[in-house]
Image (tube, rainbow, N blue to C red; front, top):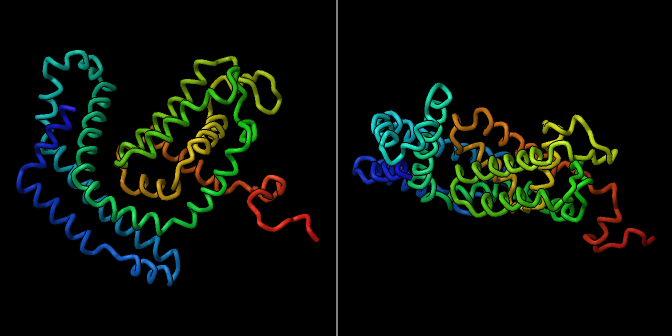
Length: 304
């Protein structure tokens, strides 16, 4: 918070404040109306999505330029802040090569969050208009399938059986539901996805040796260590239970606006896993089980 407060005060400087204000005014001025969006979509939904991506890319470049300028200009101050006696307990975390990496991640995260507060939040309605309209068909399909899949048991997704039942995964689902859906900033939404993924890993670690293969109902040596083949079904189940309103638009937002450096390594893996999860949800073929689908249909499939 001390690092973020420093960045907040930097944005109070008139030159930086004018740069942000001019950019925000320009983007709002060029924001298309709903009629404009309909006109673009009339030439194909791909055209609308590309126009949205172009606008998001422009915003990403601006966020990145602000972040880079503040990181380069304030690096000495950031080191001074983290060296303060008040943060003595944290210094052990920053020793050695791994400590330096952790320090850089901490500083980047603090700077990025305040940058998004200053430059993304004023443009949130513009971004939302692009995303909601550009990916509404994909999100309608995902929403329909999520509503249906929520009625299925966890073993339907290939989730390993746990001694405490499927409810044990609901802590990760709640993180997604509460912290992804209710967060405003892209960086906060991405943090919540990482937190949910780590919660899944924590649950598996705490139940090491107690996990049962959902197919054979027998303990499996392979399932004692969480690999991608086991992690993805669990994440799919948690995303379905979280009932995220616009998962497809969310994926576009995170891929377009989150810090590229942050998306490397563990965070990047979890983001890619979340994107794969949304694709898997959309790819579920529910038509092969017509009995489950009848409640959604107004026509009796059994009628001649």
